[in-house]
Length: 437
Ligand code: ARG
Image (tube, rainbow, N blue to C red; front, side, top):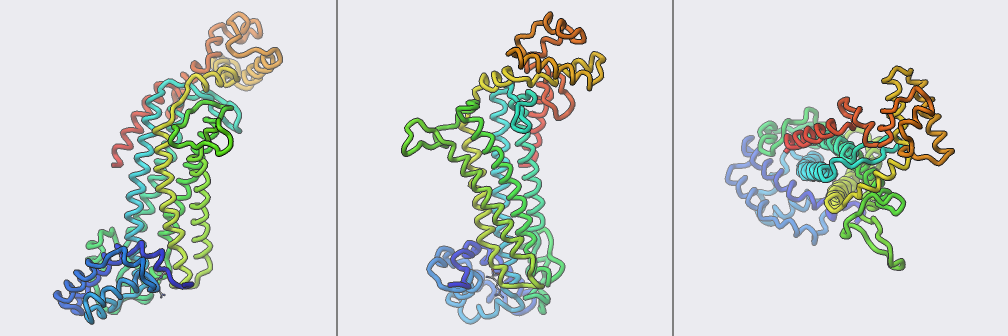
């Protein structure tokens, strides 16, 4: 029970069968199997019921598949391991399985990016305060805020695609560690199994789990992004903010307090990020002291990998559901922007544009804020006359900047929050997304 892995690595059974079929065909090309024998083996492998492994006590999925093969095909099955080790098989199976899971995850990521763009398009003009240090800083458009997450997810997509290319390398033909003594055509095996290239050192194959770490690292970063979005939305949907209404289907009540509408879905996304980061940490620590080449410790990578892949996929699905069922109450963040001094920078910059040195402008706008705070004035309370009376370096036109939707119009440099810039960014983001699929 202690050393067995079948209860979890049976998830690799499809990959193990596919790899063994390809290897049987490769053995015909080196004269170990006749083509009749290979086709007997391939048919027997195809007839294995993937679910049957749940009832077996075999040590691992590779042993289990060989056992089934012997039962179904008879003594010819004994030839399938010619020149082949479980050490390369486990690498092959994990790579095949992970490649498929990455493809599914990339699709989920694209779906999530698309949902973000849809939500942005529902409130194209909504003004919200942007925060630094969790204090109201400068006004931005709601779509601009959502596009920030789009960019993070786009980098996640890039990282996972890069991880996929390092996963997608064919290890068979490496033997246990020293290479194959049979002239198997490794390039043919690679193209048959859909790999881009072949591994170049047999010892590296036995001892390498970098491709698992590549995935876990990309998955961890993606989970950090989902966790931060979750944290934002837990806050933004609270009574204190009251910007967002989360869908009823993604919230829960309390067993005691009748009024509660708790954001459990997003709390779980935030919580589950810890599992994936934990998996990355576990495999890093698992690998760091291993002598070359294969060591049984490496069997411990799989539960971490499976759990992380499942957690990332389900979190992406959950966040998608939350995004699709959430609505913004645009007047609430608008009010929050108007009630604060997010326009202070706009004023300072307007002064700078009119010739006041920026540092002096910063001081002057700061004095105006201080005066307002002390006298209980909000930005909208400043009339053009009062502003000029406060200091003649202000012009009457600058009073229009007291509306938080105004100053942002100057932020037209690429990547900024000016309305037309954001509109262009949204359509550019949609085009970029469409190119991926
Ligand atoms: N179950 C093993 C693993 O996951 C497969 C390789 C076993 N190789 C060995 N020599 N015991 O790593």
